[in-house]
Image 1 (cartoon, rainbow, N blue to C red):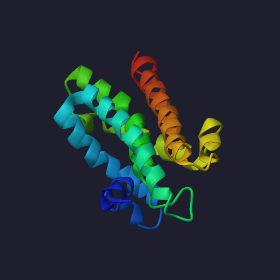
Image 2 (image 1 turned 90 degrees about the vertical axis):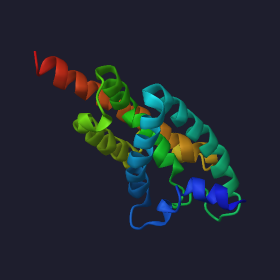
Image 3 (image 1 turned 90 degrees about the horizontal axis):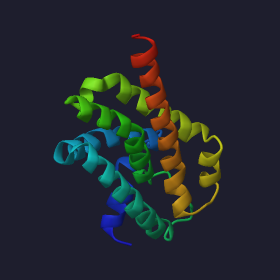
Image 4 (image 1 turned 180 degrees about the horizontal axis):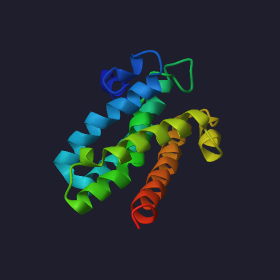
Length: 166
């Protein structure tokens, strides 16, 4: 295993922050995602999210081969991927309106909170993936939590902008 793999799965060491390394990883996703969005736009943000997810499975598999744990707490690339999925609707919405993602801060906050809720609570398929005990499960419990959070962001935005504003 290389230093590059460790740097990637721990998101440059963010995964070593305590307590709540998953929350730190989710927070680290914001500046990284913003940089990706600025450089590539909303579509590129989606593509990079997919690439990070695919590379995350492979790198996590390499990393956990050398560990006693099948889901080491310092591995937070899964939180980055899941958080970015949760924020994709915000990026798409901002892009469609010609806004900066930060202009849609309620969606960013909701995406963060919903992702953390689903990642910690682990309902249904999130928990099933978490219990797999392999790199795919490590990554995809957060991918599914991100999908749930993204759906929540869309639903709450529809309520806020459709029902509440007439």
